[in-house]
Amino acid sequence: MFNIFKKKPKESAKLFYHTDVHSHILPGVDHGSQNVGESLEMLRAELDMGITHVMCTSHVTAETFENTPETLTAAYDELKQAVEAEGLPINIYASAEYRIDEYWTREYEAGHLLPMPGKRILLENSFVQELIGIDNMLFELQVKGYRPILAHPERYRYYYDHKERYKSLHSASVKFQVNLLSLTGYFGRGARETALWLIQNNLCDMFGSDMHGMDHAREIQDYIGSREWRKLCDKYDLPKRIVNDREFEL
Ligand SMILES: [Fe+2]
Image (cartoon, rainbow, N blue to C red; front, side, top):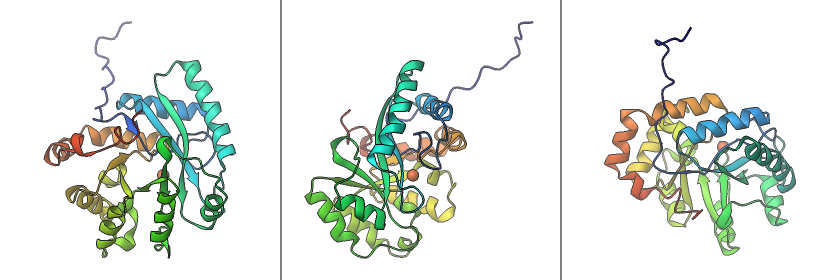
């Protein structure tokens, strides 16, 4: 029988930007999405939040995920076909989240990279300690025409008592991408407080979902429907300051 008491599913709150610059949506290449079905579900969640352009930034890390432009492009082609078959109104782009380690150094020196549009490249620091020579590497990278984006600066604990490093990296033209999941408290108090500090100090250029699965998508959907998120957007004029869309001119 027709159930008049059945609740309509709640519509997700929308983000003020349309480009997700950090996601693990490509199927089967890291510990994000494991198959095309899961990837499509994640892309539907992105659409629900107002995202229409998704940078697929799968992990590239020594020993664990030694992806190459070829492995990433193969996963991308498979997903792209499925997106077209489903008729999803979303654009996806093949790229990577490069951990700065010995594998990165080899790939970078061999010119074997898969940047985002406009030669933007998403870099992840080590979680243990800052790499010696990182400033030179970032400078050199820019001389070669790449435009580095540092993934989730708020997650590197060794910067918490050295906030001046954030300022020096940022003033060296490295863009900062804060994770929405850090704001939710998903990565603990230190990451949340530092994410807020970066926003307050005008050091947050972009947001990313860093979505590895539907659990992350749901957590973000809840957060962007919260009063706290709306207040942050208003207080710091985020729709004007955040360059997720402007950075790529898609
Ligand atoms: Fe990531």
